Length: 606
Image (cartoon, rainbow, N blue to C red; front, side):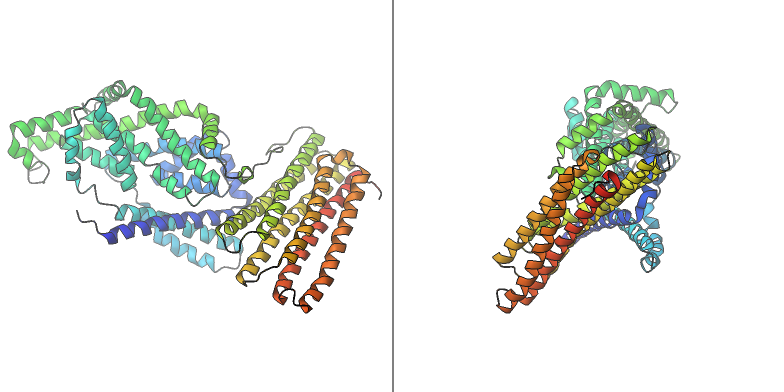
């Protein structure tokens, strides 16, 4: 087998295409999904049983557990599916992959999804040139999906062709008579082999060849198949590398599910293999343990026949060929039964421990920043309570949580001002700011939908006024988030123009931020206790707004003098004033929230 450096570079390129496809697919999903896809996925994964069934059906249809789990990772990365929902789907996908093993065992073929890649790109390209942004996003999703599968296909192409060179595994024969040690060795070989060739189906085929040549017994073949269950988790782990914390946790959950499943099987390995041997014989498929012994007997008694057993030089009617073919079918069915029984028992145990799995995964993959967790509404859910007034109370609490999340963006924007231009820290902090703004948009939509559904119920006039006020408050809070991202965009443009601020500018911007933060804290105090908002706090908010406006006016006047006196460049003054105006606008949105509290909820005169 020749494997050149160019082939290795091809492998790196294939992995790169796979990761890029994952990124484009996830971004396209986020932009195109809207609530419809989120609602569909939510219905498909409403509880652990429907989620498991969804995973099984998707994997059975596309005949690739790697592909289905990568899709799950992308859904989680796009915020369309929670970690708990993804766990159930992944458990179902592990059972669904046994369908592929049965198709290979019974019919000897597998659906080749890569054949649909180019037609998919052909369908997607026209969508990129349409005027509707939703259609463009769908086109991006389809192209990302195509690249992802193209990358998977190319990875299989550029890894060393181990399946066509089974002689490479002949040395393993010397490790096949070490008892339980052999089981652990072949389990490890199964893990590594599947990680390299990126296909549990190919590992299955290599295992069958090794059995057929008499190198290993049926129990070691089962150990190889068991190892392939862990090895196949490398694909979603690769996919999660370009994703967020939730995507990484999903990939870790997949690994944990298979690892713990293999752990309990290893504790009862020989009895479990005997159980599957008995099931295979009970189904009339013969004894799967007989193949290796029969081939070794032929090698010892008829070496000339053994030498020609695998080069297709013996006629099909030869009794040894017929017997080996029959036993090969028995081993193939036996391994499929082993794979199926293992995954079914694993599922029946693990499905009750979904919540426990989520806690373990969250512990193993902690968020770098606690606030980086994927957004999840805390007080309101899909269903409404019977008491309409209680629904409003829940929404009030959720709005306060929403405002707290947006408040963090103000701190991020201020920190970004003092972060070194174009540094890694600047890029990461700006990405967090973008992510928070995206989460803010989605929270606004979720809360607004909830409030609209509340308004459809039987409410008093006061209740209807409260909902109208809360809808306005939610919109204004989202505008505050937009301003924070706007400040980040101004800083990006400043960096691209290679403009520098002096210490005077930094000091003035920090003062402006301190006014905004104080105004935000006053607003949060009002939102946390809307029903008992005090007049003094509302007056304090109005005074703070006047301070912000007056300070903005002072800075504008001083800016002209500073530019004339050459304190800093004209372009620096432009970006400086853009930031000041953006912050003053943030103060306007904050006072709009206070207005809503005063005028429509409390009716307190100032």
